[in-house]
Image 1 (cartoon, one colour):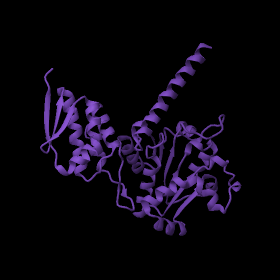
Image 2 (cartoon, helix red, strand yellow):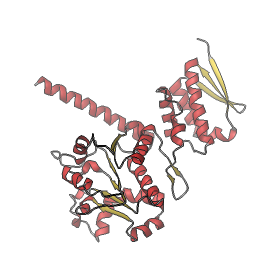
Image 3 (cartoon, helix red, strand yellow):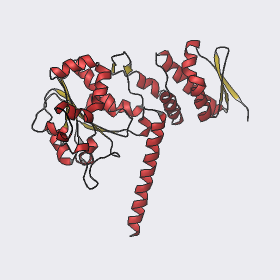
Length: 330
């Protein structure tokens, strides 16, 4: 087999970003595409089998373009670029990178990082109610918060309402010490964290004081009609069917709703039905309601989280297949 080589000119200011600490990123590309990559005289040389070299070169070119756009490359970018190239979906990262939702208080742009996240963001833009369903680390809540804050700042809505079921204490919050806010805070901390990062603590506090941002347990939504608001229901897998119906019927004119949940992490009693599961069946054919299913491919936390999620998905699929075969034998 003849060795094939491609030489690529990469500006020196982008070399460090491309190669990563201790050449970790380039070693990943080498390992996945079975090629050899060296940096010589301000150029990157890729050697190996012709098809593998061409795939690696397209991946490198995409990553360099990302770097030229001002992105600091992370391990997740490298893994996703490799995966998309293997699936013949090259340049997906460049398409996704063009969609900036907003910036954090520190000026960091918030963008979808995977194709699934991009479809989720587009669904939020185009539908009144969106269900974001997927495992931990897929950015369901964070992207929803970014979209809500962007809509609030541009006066598309007059307020933001964030809620989640306080399932751990059966919504009997009186057992916890302190005033009402102290009782509620432990359950809603993930929502606060996203607000602080995107909006800033001072701006959040002012808007909260004015009643323009409201963070409350799902139990306190009963009896209300929510007009001209951006409403996010987090951890929806822990709702009962009655709670989910109650929540969905609160929606008023000019409102947009995002419901996020992970069907594999329910904290309900073993024999209890999840409101999220029921809603997916009941509402699947209604216009202006979208369902976005994110997977382990869309995990944007530490790469180890993606491997953990994938391992659990494989295990649960195997268990379901085994249970089905066992029932059939009976």
